[in-house]
Length: 347
Picture 1: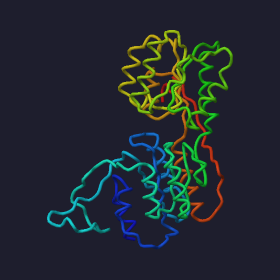
Picture 2: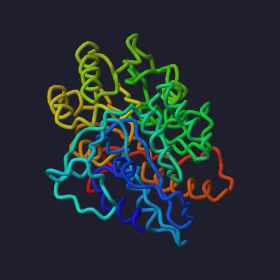
Picture 3: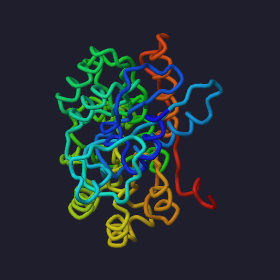
Picture 4: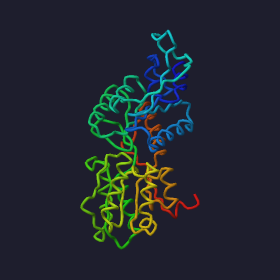
């Protein structure tokens, strides 16, 4: 069909193409469009979620065709540039663009959800940023009859149908348990986080503390709160390493610092002796490819990884089930796995 061909040509940003595409008003039982809305652009974690959705769409044994659309604040947008002298001509599904004019999506996550809902996609998966407007936008989409689920972070007050992701408390416990295996005698530690009032972050922090017993003491500046920007997280760890010479461990409950690989390398070079001897053990959440590369090179000690591709696969299955009127579990945990330097040698 024309709409399907048009969306397939939208290789840079499906969101823009979706909003430009004409709506036929028909419901396609065998051709479903799933929108994955990330909170931020440029994250390999959320890219992996979308890849998992794509892979599951190809693997399904039924005849349903699933298109996994992907967008969020700060994503690159692409729209066909209008031909010279014909600026008032609207784009058509079969038009062949001669050029692409690229810009950045300046819409909020809430507005992107509302736009997807207005475009009548068949389901939406959201990793909510924590902005109250996002929960409100999810509620609006649900009231419009569109199945909505959350992933990675939750917004249960929004009326979403299900949550897909990691048990945050257990994830924090795994981070703490990994540290205890490196330093069973205990010591001083610091946690690096974003806003500890966010439920998922708070649960991870509580999980770390659950496991670390009386042999461990948390320094007064912990948790060291970052904005979530990669460089800011590195700066917080730099401050901790520079100010607390006797700190035995730093646990980052998110992947943020290791995702700025160049600055992480520079930081590790300045504290190379302490890191090499494991005088300070660095435990970081997630196990994305760039993080594994750093740990293989001795620039970190432990990764506790979520499974973003599994999240993407479960997103596809749940939204197809919800669209067809089937019941789904309200919470689906995808688990996690631990990697250390020794685990990654030779991989």
